[in-house]
Image 1: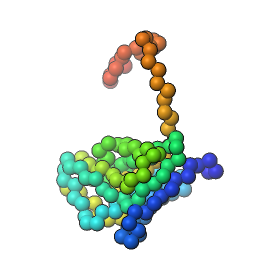
Image 2: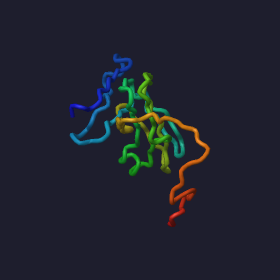
Image 3: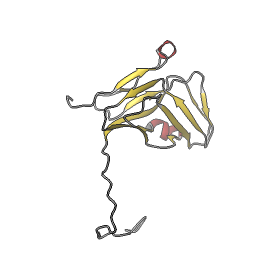
Amino acid sequence: MTDSPRVAFKRLAPHKNSDVPLPKYMTEEAAGMDIHAANDEPMTIAPGGVVLVPTGFSMALPKGFEAQIRPRSGLAVKHGIGIVNAPGTIDSDYRGEVKVALINFGSDPFVINRNERIAQMIITRVWQARITVVDELETTERGEGGFGHTGV
């Protein structure tokens, strides 16, 4: 696509992380880029535990875009591994290392090895809303109907 946003990746500590792939699309029509772990030693996530996994890269997104970090479906279904704040958001003005907060929803410990694919990243456009404070909101048919108001 010619109108695709340009995302610049910077490999952090290239002398030690040159073996860790930078994010990339695994198929021609993939929505998300796979992200790999850049941990020095295997990291074990206990059942119910959370670990912050380094990726060895930082990036620059264009203004008006975000990166969403999402779980990989294979890790989720086969091992109960998810992302604790899914989807995680990386703002366009952040320049630090991308890290992924994995959580183990499964019943067995899970080991994250270096170079393992741990998450996927979606680049999407975002808008900052113009905030207006009002005394009344316009009414709708739904009104204040909340969780489950239309039935099960």
